[in-house]
Length: 254
Image (tube, rainbow, N blue to C red; front, side):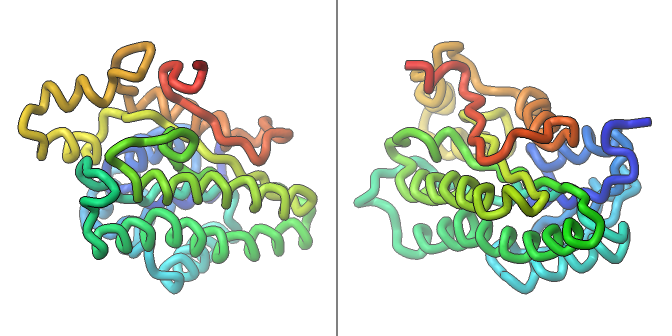
């Protein structure tokens, strides 16, 4: 029997990158999956894994409510929510950042996380009241939510907010059977990071810039981050809550 056998797991941002890799891992663990993304590519991932799927905009509260309702419809309950949906932006200084871009990053990366928690927590609380069961939420933040991120100012602001939301939600629900933790990766080899590198005049130099402050001097691999996600979601890891796990090749060890 897999570690997540018969668990109903909701994953946002599941069309590619970390979300897709996490979906693969949870499926191997026996989970029942509901995958969501704004990209229609989520359907291909879902079909490959024999999972349910929905098109959803992380910036819309009603979409998060619909996702929770659908998870309960297909599985009778929600056991794990992996809030992974997010966007980044090309490197630029604070004074260079367009207002519309700044608003969109906040809408998706920060408010989107808030709306996700607001939709998920009542369902998880209800389950705990009904049968004493426990559940967990894993938020994908970033190392930019723990330290400064020059040229990624509005993204860093949003991810610092995610770290704060994670800790607050964990404390508010510590006695309600809900664990809430965040994964904070450094730059990881995903399509989002490829997009950042791809718009640079010199992609090789851009990659070097991204890894210059990393003691290991490399990007993280998706599988390395997914291993930490599984650790955070593991039901046997029942005493860990309110943590922001830095997966950064040593950046925060300084």
